[in-house]
Length: 304
Image 1: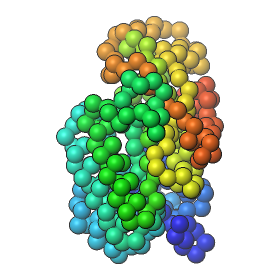
Image 2: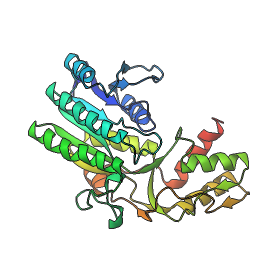
Image 3: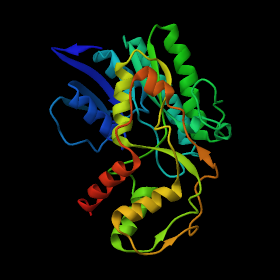
């Protein structure tokens, strides 16, 4: 990993997002000089954080930047996360831009590429999801676009002797999450004393606190492990249990209206096998569900 004096230097995309902002914080905490390709708005200024305005859809501008600025290490987290992100045609734009970014990075001397994959690459009908066994056969355009970057990128990187790391990120939660997501929307209603409207919440999923997700990504970056690694807790939890635990921790006494809104997805069991993360990368989650929920409850109370 390239050093600046005694500091390690890394380039990141998506560094102002929900996950990326925490990855940047973890990198800075560990002594990196972080260069962030940003489409405004910018993050607040911090020591050892250098922000470069960039439209990642502009392949020529990206290539020119990498020609003028040398980086051994790239963390690519940026992707479309807007409305209907699982079905939007914009996923194809991000697929093409991601492959072009990797190509330019390699052409200009890059050595280690870490990309953000997704649980949505997997076929959810196969039980516990494993990197080396579970088919990448998710029917969503989002999942298939990510899988295309993974499949193309790892072959291209290998041909050019570049370390290729693919962090398959599962469900997560934490401070500053989009307010329409399950936990912040439920928490907002509970703290306001309003009836809580949720789906039937019978699905079983795998949740990680975003602090753990960010720390796991950086641990993966610093390890010798390559290929795909599930960034997940490996712990199955029914959504209803999460809502009930939030009610307990907030002291909520109002009504929880189960089934008041439709579920976003029909998949009953989406849980990862985190053996590669724990045994090969050596990262173990710090936040259990209760500790993580207490953290976001405290954060929400201070940001209302």
